[in-house]
Image (cartoon, rainbow, N blue to C red; front, side, top):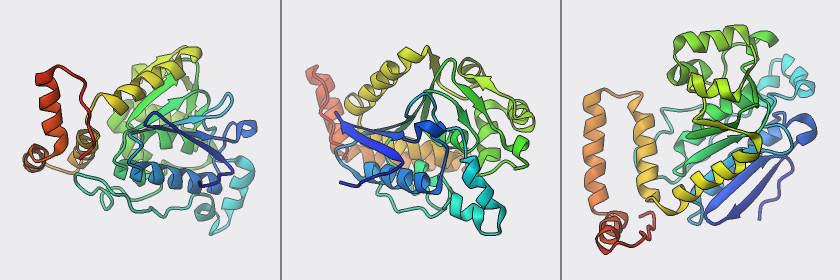
Length: 277
């Protein structure tokens, strides 16, 4: 069992929950946290007992961005790489390989075959906000505070956020959030399309658990992995290329156990026992 210093990892009922665990610093980002999160997501992605990954924060925060005390170390020529290590481990996933299409700090989220849910329980800023954009689903406390923060720190749109954010909220909203670095809450994040749903703080964990339960038990993990990869691959494809990929993946799905089980369970009017193959 891997020992962690800045995250917590718990697995139960096919769900692996990863908790950023520096509550006294609102889970501010460090190089060690980056390494541990990458390792935990990769391990869960390759674990046949895990079907869903949930990422949240300990205490009253999700991730307040880069630890400012340590960020001063990035003023040197090599400091930024020390704070934000970039290497990406391999992942075993069905469907198209996305490794080359999505390099960088959080490309491994897209390569992970398991759905990743960000449960944003409190302040979410800077690199913490960017990390959530790579998740597949985002749910937030309605009073959680968000900010891009970069312009207020003399930084730029880093780690792919200039590409991701406009695709989620539109160019006008992305420019507003990036250029002003203003704060906004979970309720506005829903209106912008940044998160799927915002709930009163006490209801967030229960809602995320319900969604995770559906993903863990009611749908084919093989189908989920392939569809997740199809959608991310489509950002670089023409319609014809996307259709060609879909046709090829459909043939593979007809040959898979989960397809046979999905049809048979429907005919027999019983819950499906998907195996992810």
